[in-house]
Image (cartoon, helix red, strand yellow):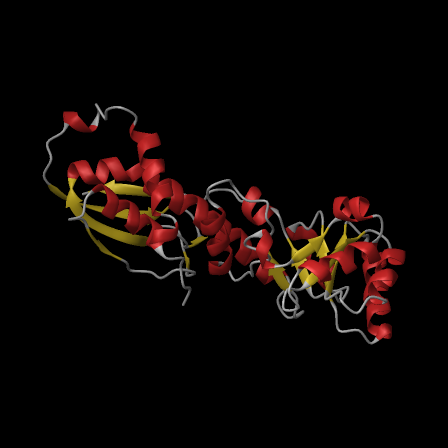
Length: 282
């Protein structure tokens, strides 16, 4: 069971999406009579479902009398032709909600579907799939929810969820040690500190700093990642290693087999193709 974010956290965004779609006047819907109708949302490809609570919220915002029935659950993989939602309501309400509702379902299901493919690619290795902050402005909360529906984990939802010292932070601080020591001074002890490194020398510097909880291995070749894992293991430190950069489906298993703990994949939220769903009114 996936716990979606509370609608109060994204309801205003849905209202904005609807205003953006409607413009000043929906002339097309006004041409048809407004009477009760039934509609079905159908998967037109194999996919992992995500976004049903958001779709229902769109419907409620457009027409409070719309009723929904959900034959499937969030995170469920369904084959082409599966009904994922049945809707009963006014013709005008269905027509005015259709595009925004489908856009959200298609985008979020696309993210969940791609995430599931990565999760399956590394199955049995113990490696977990992480998302990144490379999200669509305004959709971060929902896209990261879709990642969870697909079986992945969220990295940081906001900058307040942890410290990740990347190359620009290290350059501004002057060194890894200076950056880590400054981070520990300003961040509570419960906040984890992670450092992005590009070389084994930088990793060794992190291993010498007790306040470092994890290291992000940025764009390292496979052999270098294996060496990084061996260095970590020989050190006796329990810090986690996260591989990032050019993590494609084709490479995911090979990267996981190096012994890292996490694979972070920006494509889950910035490049996932929309899943194919359509609404048909009976």
